[in-house]
Image (tube, rainbow, N blue to C red; front, side, top):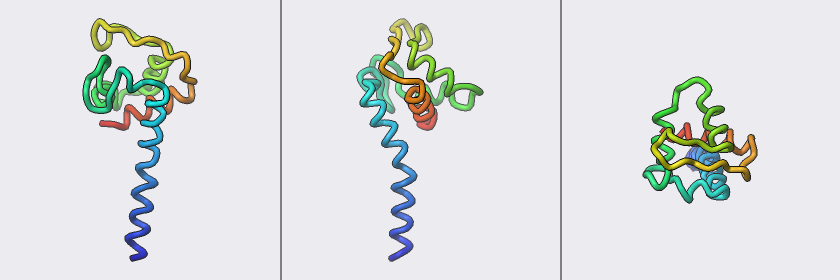
Length: 101
């Protein structure tokens, strides 16, 4: 019984950051244009992770795109700048997105 409780606690603690970062994405209105696994206005976060995952500097590059906006990478619809997102939050979001492979 004790092993089951420990295993459950470890599993919950390991998944907590993923939920916390999705909550951050929701609180910063990222989910208005993106979804974890399907294209909405912008690409699915999993598609972003596939495209940029493993590239050196990908998290920093994505954090800049989150804060300053972007255009032409995923088609004609530009991503506006997210001025309400701090640099620390943008890095957290970028790392979360890249973890979604």
